[in-house]
Image 1 (spheres, chains in turn green, orange):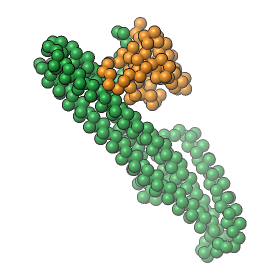
Image 2 (spheres, each protein chain N blue to C red; image 1 turned 180 degrees about the vertical axis):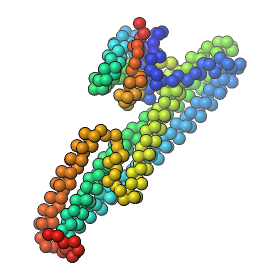
Image 3 (cartoon, chains in turn orange, blue; image 1 turned 120 degrees about the vertical axis):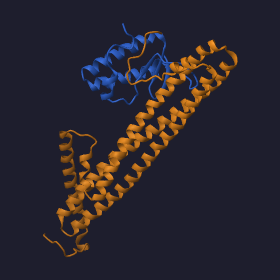
Image 4 (tube, chains in turn yellow, brown; image 1 turned 90 degrees about the vertical axis):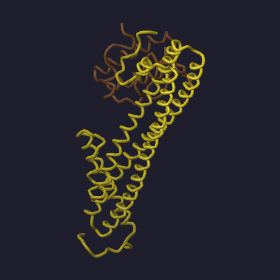
Length: 250
Length: 93
């Protein structure tokens, strides 16, 4: 069906045919094309490995922040036991931030999981197409005159070339995504080290002002709720938790 | 007609269904131009379902054919769609 396509600017078709026009010996061109395809396959493997590495890093970060949540929770309880509601509140606020961060990490890990699956699936497709191309090229080399071969090669090459171009695009997308996540993960790590964990909210995901205000509101009430719950729990325990002397202001 | 969904694979769509796909595409372009994100996502899903599930037949992995139409990746954002879904339809008049 002629006259179709060409509208989507995202799609880059490999200019394999141009290359073929210039070649003197179609057989040689075929081998060159085949080697290029194998090269691409290696790159895909590297791309998949990159995605897996990024995923592992995020999972490690998730683990650390989970520990952070437990620690902050304990600190809040201790502070409350010593009647330092202000400290308890600060710890719980940080805990809320950390929990929000955990949600973001969960989403990102799931997204990388999808990327990994897609690339693996794409690699399988590419491998099958390369194998089909290899078989075809042997047949073409054996059976056709140079002039005929040129046409046949063109057909086979544009099929496999399109697959290559599309795979390249998929890899680019995966790379962009992991790059963004890596940058963010690095920034989060630094904030954590610097002890300014609550600044995480400034890193995004991009939020508009209203989103931010709403998030702050719900974080505030979440902290109030938790504080009340902790107080009730401590109250139930009666005088079992001895105050440690310092900072009493009841 | 051979349709590729970028990042996923190729499908063979009966020629008589091309017109319906083109129609959906024109509507999607209109939605993008109107800045209607929800409407766009709905149409975009319709297009993908139309090709993948309703009418299309997935090509074997080892078939070496060029596509007539290439659709953007499934996870395209609305921002990306603004660049992809513009101008004339799949089948120029």
